[in-house]
Image (cartoon, rainbow, N blue to C red; front, side, top):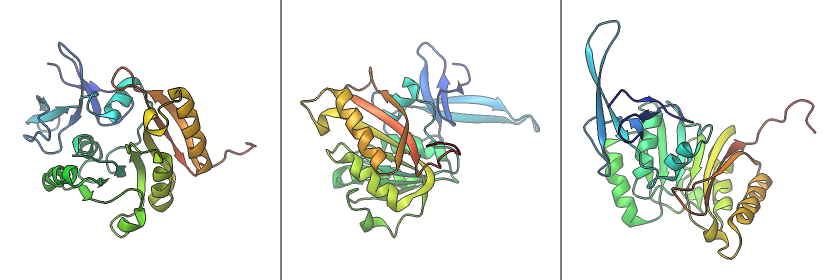
Length: 245
C-alpha cells in the first residue's frame, strides 16, 4: 500500500490507496488499536537527517462513524485541526472520539460527553491512553453540570439521537463555543419525527439552529453509510458581512 495521501474535507485525514481505498487518521498512539480497527504502518525518511521513521495510520470506517461518513460524502470542512479544542456530545464508547483525538493531536483537547454509564466505561478506557480526551459521564441536556470541567472550545460536534437534539446543541454552544466557532451536528430524521419526510425534518431542524444564532453553511445526507441522516456544519454567531442586510 502506498503512502496515504491527503483526504477530503479535513486536515489530518488521509486516503490510503490500495485494493480498496480507506479513510485513515495518523495514530497518536502508535501500536494501539481502539476498537479492533486496521492499522497501516508506512516507512518514511526525514529529509534533514535521512533518518528512517515509521508513521502509523488507523482506518476510519464510515459505517461506524457519522463524521467519517460526512468526510467521505464530501463535506468541505469539519474544523477539527491540530491544536483544536472540541466538545463532542454523544461520545458513546469512543470510536469516533479516538479519531478526533488523532486529528487534534497532543496540543488539542476533546471533551467527550456521554450519558450512558456502560458506554462511558469504554470511553474511560480509551481516555487512559489518549490523554487529550477528557471523558465526562453526564447528560448533554444539562451543560451546567459540567461547566467547571470545560473551557471555551473551537468546535462542538453533536451526535445525540434525541428529539430535542438541536436544542441540546444550542445549549452547549451558548455555554462553551467561541464566537465565530463552528458546529457539526448529525441529525437522525426518525428520532425527531418518524412520520415526516426526512428532507422536511432536516429543514425544520435548520430553522431551529438559525433561531439560536447557529448559521448552517453546509448540509449533506449520509447515504450510503446511514439512512435518513444528515450532517450540518456551520458557524456560531457569525459576523455579518459589511453591506449585508
